[in-house]
Amino acid sequence: MSDTEAAAEAERILRTAFRDEPPAPASTSFRDDTPLPAFGTTPPVLQPETRIVPAWAAGTAVASIGIGAGITGVGCGAWLILQGLAAVTLTSVLMVTLPIAALAALATAIGSAVQHARAAVTHTENHYNAAVTQHVQHTEQTARGFLGRITNR
Image (cartoon, rainbow, N blue to C red):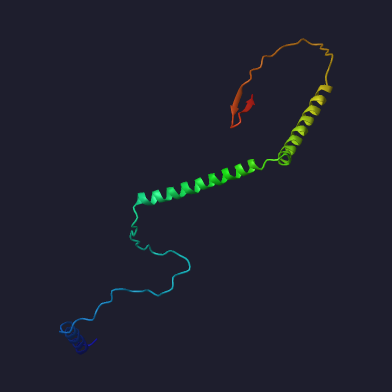
């Protein structure tokens, strides 16, 4: 920039700075219309607290909704049980208990067959030609689990 151009620019700046007109109103809001990226990191945005309900009131409301839903479920379950008990007939009792009785009879038959098969293989007479020694064994039992599973070592 030449000296004459610089002097003209300085005069223009001084004239606009010291004129008696009120300044143009400054904008108080800004809207950024640039499209957001489809992926990637974005800067954090300040989110001021705007709740007007106290925390204890919100907790009480949530607890009451949960208790109401739970009581409704218990009531529906009781209603279903009582409806089932009111509709008990001989046919319904037989339809429920016959498969259970059939499984019990099958388990008894299998257990009896296994017991008789084991009893068939026995030795009535044992002949030993060597000296007999007895070894004392130490057995350790531990019970574990929900139903008390026992382990022998």
